[in-house]
Image (spheres, rainbow, N blue to C red):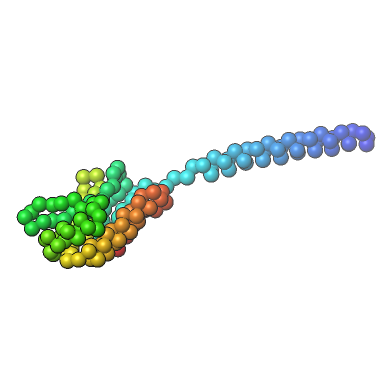
Length: 150
C-alpha cells in the first residue's frame, strides 16, 4: 500500500512540474508578444502664432533665410559669414530679413523683421536655430504629438 501511494505522489509531482513548466513557457510567450507590439499615434501637429500645421505626412523639412531687397529681389543669406551680412546690411540699411521653415510644398514664416545692425541679425539667427532644433527633435520623437513653437 505504501509503495503504490509513493508512486502516485511521484507521478503527481512529475505532472505538476510539467504543468508548471508548460504554463511558464506559455506565459513568457504571451508577455514577449505583448511587449513588442507598441503602437504610437503618428498624428503630429505644430502650432506657431495661432496657426496649426499638420506634420504627420511631411517628407522633407528645411529652413531658408533670405534678404528681401528694396528692388523686389531676394538674396539667400543661409551660410553667409559675418562680413557678408554686415556688407548687405550697410548697403540696404535697414534690411528686411525673412526666416522660413519649408515643409514639403508648404512654407511657414518664422520671422520677418528689419535689421539695422549685425547684432539684431545674430539674435534672429539664434532664435531661428533653436526653433529648427526643436522641430528636428519633435519629428524624431515617436511619442511626441504636438509642438508649440515660441
